[in-house]
Image 1 (tube, rainbow, N blue to C red):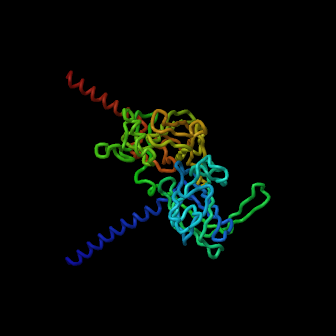
Image 2: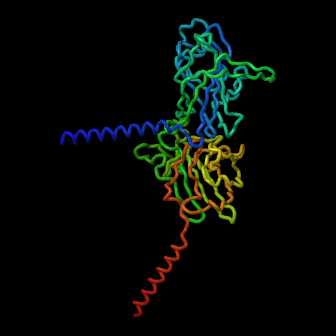
Image 3: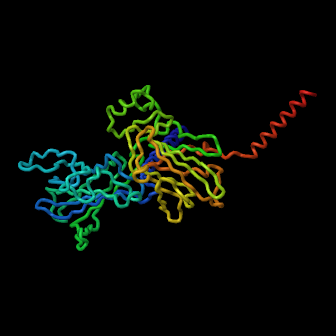
Length: 449
């Protein structure tokens, strides 16, 4: 009996451990799936446009097919591993960050001899003889929905010590994409239908010798260990302001880790912001309860007979980051009756065509499309006017608050539902008043009896 019990115990523990491992595996695998942009990805096309005596010339183009996730400064870095002993003789529209060991070449050395090159975009203002189409934007690529005419980035490279025919050439492997930090996972290069190119005069179409396609998907779980934004709530019908949950993006620990956050009133603020690490991607945030770089506040402002009004404010608490071309994605069932929006651009997102409950919002160019770093100017705001649908509209049970919010493609942490501002219950106030009146009556009765 004792042996059977021990065996059963070991079996139970093993089953629990296996279940935990499998659940963790499924979480990390499905984390890259975005329900609001199920087909979003970055596709890399590697087009071989001509052969050379020892290799080929290729144009590499990255297409951002994500609705609202863009690549912000300092831009993308694309890497791979060569299948053989290839080298990059020359480049246009991009450059390798390191040349590597080219000592075996006695005359003109190649542009890059590394087995695992890392390529970056050239900066704006690059001489024209070093440019190609869709290059030289500092690695910045806008999202597909936000700016559909500027969602690609390209560079050209001449590859040597490679195959010179479709049968002898080998695609690179182990592609990596930093945009600008981690978060993207890239699949293998797959042979695709050769790309076609139209000449500038539009009268001739040329075709690539060979095309490889690489698909990269984003995972917030891989991008950072902690959230990057949070949501606070308030309403006209309740004095309670529901803040971001405490320690949403971390906790204040200046005692054990000095410099984890900055007091905006500190006399040493400028020296800390401009000190070591000022070019780091690590946020330097203002000391708050939530410790998030970004806070989105949703305020139910006014109630009319046929409409209701919301004010949205985005506040930047990061002293090291200005957010250009920022965007906000909000999910709420009343977006199918959005009547007017002030000082923001708006586009409905309908990944599931029968449901229109998701909106993409972003700033007006040259007005509020630039979110300044933490400080007096570090916020943008707008108001939204909704028409009421009598079959669904209510202020009860937190219906007026969003279901989820994304900032720059990252999911923001919402307060728990039981903390939402509640609608005052008129009957409870009447009951309380009657109870108080009864107590007062009994007190007088016993006092003067």
